[in-house]
Image (cartoon, rainbow, N blue to C red; front, top):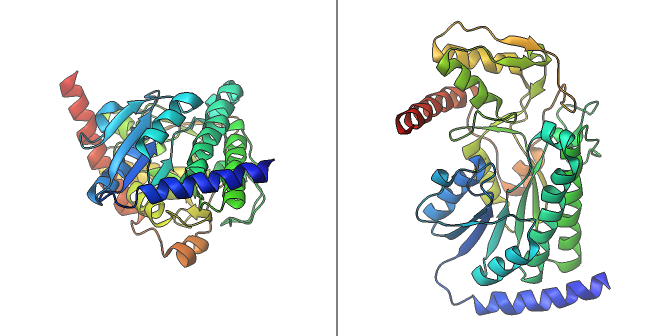
Length: 336
């Protein structure tokens, strides 16, 4: 039955794509396009001549991040009927699927919602995309998926061992993306991201340690540094990630998108503190449930298959990010 469904989907997709061949402008849907990474991707696609539809429920996204040149539809990807209707209306050439429940601790508190968004929501996206013959570029997680006790740097062939529901839901979502691609022939892509940082990242959450530290430095308060500053991550600049997502478009496979450089959290704090020119001291605390001790990704496959490597050095990226975030903090204060 599954194979038969995909044969039908491939036929429908081919017909729809053929009907759009005469259009002059390429179109893209970006789920989560009002978010940190998504809004940067939207800007890059617009600059490349795409017509862009942003799909975001604004639970974590910010309407002000979305370029006025893009159209924003407020929609929860868990709402299958509404999502299908929109995708069929737009008839995109590609879907970049970034919408997610991205908090590790929230996934521990409410694994059912985490599963609904990250698994059912992703299935909704990839299912309608496959039926229309549209490739999906799906952003998954690197460190949270692989877990602890893995080779460092970690390659894509490593069997996932997530420590929290968030990692488990992303792994399950990946399985749907890969399965639908294998059966249909539509070139869906999985990009496993390292710890992404850069301008527009919200300091109100847990996933953006660079923005959280930057805000504490801006207001002169001490952040809580979990794991006593010892955990390591693979920090990658948002502009490099956007380049990778575009390079991965239409390329079937799974790719780590990071730098291959392992950096401890305390080093990030010191770099940002130097950029801020202050002597604020952090408050040290134990790791929270589900958090990793070490994470660093092997990016050689992305280099060989996509021709992509991260270009922004961490020290440079942190300085630029701190300056940009301070400007954003001041702007929000002036608007309050």
